[in-house]
Image (cartoon, rainbow, N blue to C red):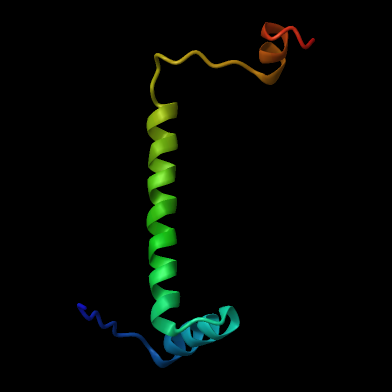
Length: 72
């Protein structure tokens, strides 16, 4: 399995170890989880941005949807 190393300050190391301890995981697992959660968040935000920037979509308010569906 490939190996990755990071250079961090003593304070950063202590913070990361504390985070891992609070969550009951090894430091390497905490770092991987944080990285992949960040990656997923950025992907989600890009997907939302791409969707919202499509000017060909017609948007409706909650009230308008209620009227269309005959709920109001």
